[in-house]
Image (tube, rainbow, N blue to C red; front, side, top):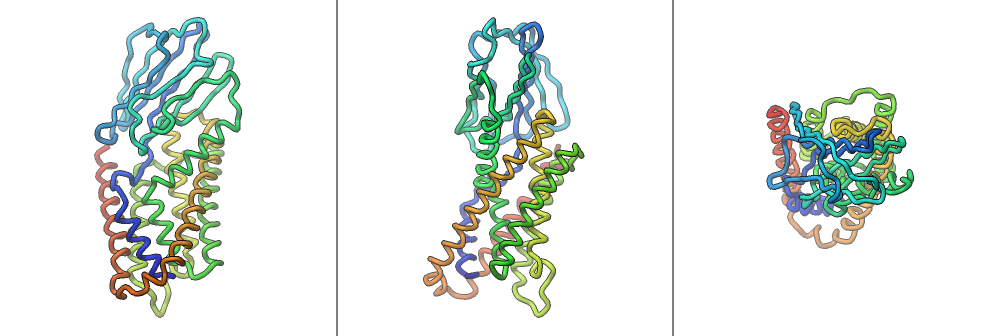
Length: 332
C-alpha cells in the first residue's frame, strides 16, 4: 500500500499552490451598538496580506458616518475606528458585507455586540461574503459557521494535508492509524483547555514556522526508510500527530485572539472548528486509503526508484514554507 500512497502524495504536492499553505490571518470587523443608538466600528486588518487582496466593509446604505475615521498602527496590524448612525431601525435584519473576498485563503471574523447585550459572531469568506443580523441568534448557527470553517480550513490547508499524508505512510496498521488520529484529536483538546483557562498561547508566527518545520522533519524520516533500529517517530507516529495537533490548534487559537474576538466566543468557536477539522481529516484519510487500494495494481508497475520522488518533493516544499515563514515572522 505504501508505494501507491507515495504517488498519491506526489499528485498532492504537484497540485499545491504555494500561497495556499496557510497561516490563517483573518481580518476583524467589530461592530458595537452604543447606548445612544450609534454604532462604533473597528476594522482590523493584518499588515501582511495576499497580493491583490483589498478588503472593505460594506454597511447598509443609510448607515452614515458621524465622525472621521482614526487609525491605530500595531506591529502586525492596522485598526481603523469610526462611528455610524444607522437610523431608528438599527442593524437587526440588515445585511453586512465584505467587499474584495475573492480568494479562499482570506477570511474575515465578524463580531457584533448590540445594546441589549446580545453578541453575534460569524465568519465571512469568498463563498459567504455577507451576513444578515438575525432577530435572534441561535447557538446552532454559530456552531454551523465555525464547523464549516474548520472543514474548509483543512481542505485548503495543504501543509496540514501533507503532514497527515506523511503520517499515513508511517503507520504500520489499523491500530496505529487509530492511535494517530486519536492523538491529533487530543492535541486539539489540549488547545481547547488552554483557551478555556484563558492561558495565553504562543505567538502565531513561531507556531507557523514550527508547523512547516514538522513537515520537513517528517519528510526526512520517510526518506530514511526502514532501518534495523526504528526511530521514535517510526515506533510512535501518534506522538508526532499529538504535537502537530497541538501546534495547529494553538495557531488557530492565537489567530482568533489576535483578531480580537471576545474571549467568551473563543471556546465555542474552537470546539466547532476542531470538529470540522476532524470531519475533514477523516474524509481525507478515507479518500487516501480508497485511492491506494484502487490504484495499487497500476502504480506497482513503476520502477522502485520513482517512489522516492514524492518524499523529496514533500521535503522541498516544506523547507520552502519554513524559510518563507521565518522571513515573514522576522519581517513583522
